[in-house]
Image (cartoon, rainbow, N blue to C red):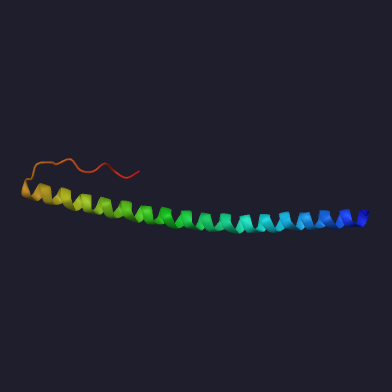
Amino acid sequence: MEVENVLLALEEKNKWIRRREKLQKRLEKVRKQKRTHLDQLDDVKKHVAHYDEIVTSLKESKGIPDIPTAPPLR
C-alpha cells in the first residue's frame, strides 16, 4: 500500500512538472508575440510621424490653414 502511495505521488509530481513546462512554453510564445506587436507599433508610429511631417510641409508650402489631425497614438 505504501509503495502505491509513493507511485501515485510520483505520477502527480510528473503531471505538475509537465504542466509547468507547457506553461513556460506558452509564456515564451506570448513574450515573443508581445515583442513582435511592440515592434509593429513602433513602425506604425514612425510612419504616422513621417506622414505628419509631409502634411505639415505641404501645408506650409501651400499656405493651407492648420486643420486638426487625429490624436497621437499611445
